[in-house]
Length: 222
Image 1 (cartoon, one colour):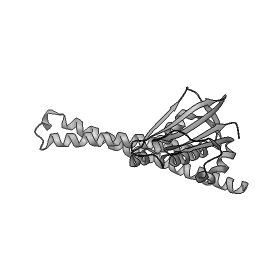
Image 2 (spheres, rainbow, N blue to C red; image 1 turned 120 degrees about the vertical axis):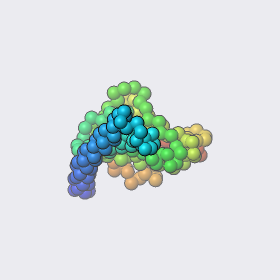
Image 3 (tube, rainbow, N blue to C red; image 1 turned 90 degrees about the vertical axis):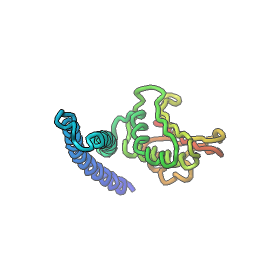
Image 4 (tube, helix red, strand yellow; image 1 turned 180 degrees about the vertical axis):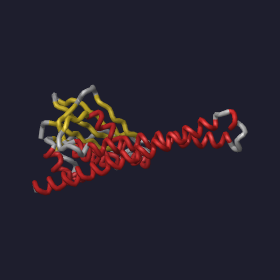
């Protein structure tokens, strides 16, 4: 089992290294597109270009290109940070930043479900020593689990807080009635992630109710 975990770590680090390298190349391509579109806008602004056919339509198109390039730069930046989360097996992780990162990566899925993602921290500087990639994978699985039961227009909240003096992450989404009874451990649907809970030194609890689900991850209690 230990050898399999080490093999999985090596594979994750390799994928992270390749992905990070490719995102740097994509950034270079986007920089060229941004500069080229900017140059064309400058040329269209010259007095000699005032009579250029379809000038206004071209300027609008260039504006759209610039907007989409900026969006792509942001998306690639998110992907780059995610790739670098595989660099180290253990590092200081800011929970607010991690929750925001995971919400950004899950934005398309949330849009397709018409669910709003709300990451926040009850205070700044809540950090833990953990494997950032493994922790992000666990949080992502919990997010998907909680989103499954949300109706359109529902809200999924991700909160970093201190619970009885220990850092904790709460992932919850409710469309109707409130919480049910809290039970120790991950929900049965997430049992395959129990090894991550143990390796990260977490205690997991969950609640199910007719209108939603909640997962609580408590650090330093595993």
